[in-house]
Length: 311
Image 1 (cartoon, rainbow, N blue to C red):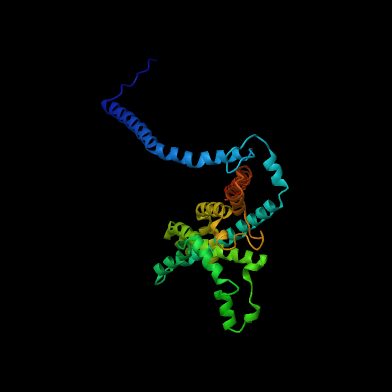
Image 2: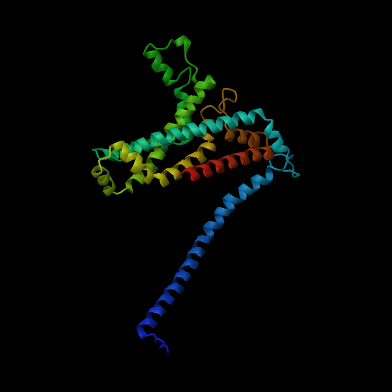
């Protein structure tokens, strides 16, 4: 039986030409987009990739001063790292600082965001007040806290003395004890950054439709059940990004601790950021400082991989 081949109509030919034209236009727009993004991508590569690669290369070199005259491709910096007691003290402090402060920031930040997302009069004022701690420069914030907890003229001891809870001859040396200094750093870091977490989570809460809230009520879910089984899963992408950003910044913390205790008393509050600064800027040992920076980079990537896998 002879088959009859369908002849394309004029309308079909027009549709085909239109689709082909759209495909060509899409490819042109894609090339234009890449061309416009090229300067930004090049700048990002130069400003981020090159310093990272240079740090890795420096970590395998030794000798010289302030990066001048460095030679060799050796593992001595990493061998030194294994037996450096001061490094391990800073490493332990950095990990504990990151875990405790990020957890506190996430908990209090989410709580603040849930409160600011509720409908009540003056809500705009509460939202503005939430951002106040984050708006203060970190170094300024740390200096103010250092004055507040100064054992000679600090506000905290002054208030306790005024209330009769503290004798002027037995003032509390808040920053003279490793335990109290560390706890104060934790509290200050949580107070400082939970407002940023609240802002990011509040933005995520605004994307949840009111229909979802109504569905919770119709299904008879309690407020806690609605938050745990509905709101929290919908916030998972926001929480993941926020968690990653806060972890990166906590592991790289410098000015907050530097302006508050500068690692004192002794080296009990010295983190890896302060230790890297001491090695590179004070002693000019670019090789060993870069080795510690590589460790920070690896630890940061490990945390990010853990978060992405969990969330």
